Image 1 (tube, rainbow, N blue to C red):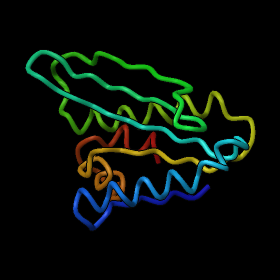
Image 2: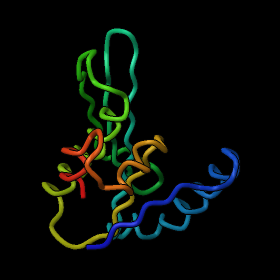
Image 3: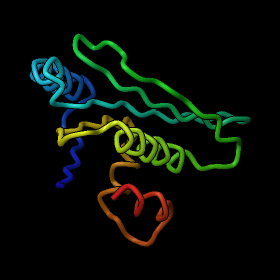
Length: 130
């Protein structure tokens, strides 16, 4: 299994266009169930940390969605990493054959943390993910 991380170097608008082209190119693979696409998100306010994932299918229909209240004490990067971990756990339970998997993460800090794979903050989740 190989892993590839990508952060667009363009503006937000250019990154959005890259994303739309990629998902459009994957639509046929989604129809044939050859690809899994997950989206992750973490958010924080003064009282809560919320983690959520969802999986889309053809024509961007949501096939699976769930979320968790992680309480008020986690750092947001840990919430973002937790969502990636849970997406992979869901994938592991559902997967019967090899597929390409795309996990879209809206946190550059989380992506950069996963690329490092070193002994710094969030290491337990990073090791579980990688």
